[in-house]
Image (cartoon, rainbow over all chains, first blue to last red; front, side, top):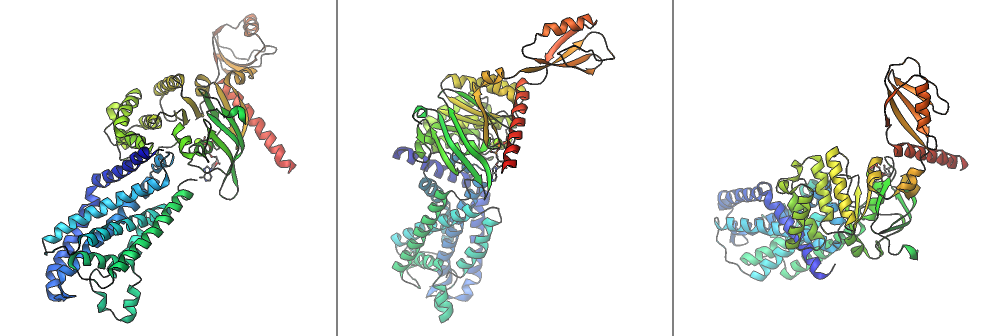
Length: 257
Length: 319
Ligand SMILES: Nc1ncnc2c1ncn2[C@@H]1O[C@H](COP(=O)(O)OP(=O)(O)OP(=O)(O)O)[C@@H](O)[C@H]1O
Ligand SMILES: [Mg+2]
């Protein structure tokens, strides 16, 4: 394949991925928006007013960036894991496997598809949050940078999950037992300065903490941890996941018999 | 292997072991010339789909080499794949997508832009009688339509080698005929075709060359014409005018009664059927009509597989 053909293959995958989540929008776009609207009402308005301030910010302003990030993470992951596993399950992944499309194009195509949904939902949720609180963007490059890298990292993770998955149970285990706890303990709802020494130390192993804080910094200008460190951490994880995903595709494990 | 360099397909010493020790292919050698129409025949589990899987890279071979129009699938992965279009045995498209989208997407995977693909999709959907159905979810197509959709999909990048794994399974007789006509047409236009089938009649009416495979080995690789020559017996069914009670006896023609007004007879190729009619006539039996029983290839096929079974048993007892 020459470069132009590769580009066609790549954009075909991305377009097909976007078409997929747009076609089933009641399953892909509506639920996250409803969930987030509830979070905003409950934490922002009802409980938030009792909490007062967190890190010197009104609680709604503290929690909104975390919630936006949460929707980007879960939707990027969910899109790739269900789309890729779905095409394994229906066997239409074979359409790609018999084609001359190189594995790294397959990988980036699916990942960009997942990022599109993650960022798309993130944008809708951001618009929604504007109804509940006011923000002025503190740093546009930090905000955009961390959003892209987070969506990238969780799309990659979703792909790896899908390659290993043999059943629909297997694609909900990681989101339920790993992703959700990490998100809830990743500084979305509270500042880790509230935690004692040991718990704070443990929290520092949670990559989501770094993303949420970097994003919050980008939006409202406060963070519990070093921003450069955040980017380094997310970059490192993404590079690692990319390598693993590509290795699995090259090996053809669980895809070719 | 110089003389095979330009073959459409060249397979040497191909083996496949599934899991730890299930040998699905035990050393396959196969040559298919450009422009050929080639049949791969064999009973269930013979290894036909495994060979096809290896050709289109869905199955990883254990050893051996596969070359497609001179491109080795290990060394020249991308070029080799451009040459092959495959129609798998089982449906493997996204059931929620529309036929038109499926074709244009598949073209995209081969680097063909949507503008070009749209024209080709129209051409093949029309030729295969699916144009009216282009915009319905493909799960709502009938079984035969789904199979034709997979044929259109395999052709969208205009491959030089088309491989079909049981293309007419679950297709009614009329459609089967039109599928045959279609395949003959594209073969005439220059596409090399390999197909697997259980319908020997299909191989006989479509293909020039044939390989018969059984339990991972090729047991016969020849032209259809040669194969048919090897048949030395034909079985006929004879309908007679008056009902009879006892089966007539004619030397050299073993007759058996199917019912009071029909007989079955197995005739050596080099014997004239006239003598049989004469003998029956002398016994006062008038023949109304006669037809071939089953398929002649069918018999040969069972014959060969049977022999293979015997020799394989011999092998086993030697060990
Ligand atoms: N993924 C697999 N894992 C283990 N064994 C397999 C696998 N695929 C096929 N086999 C075995 O390999 C043998 C050959 O299978 P294959 O599908 O190639 O046969 P076939 O000739 O296509 O048969 P059919 O006419 O029924 O389609 C069979 O015994 C089958 O059970
Ligand atoms: Mg088969």
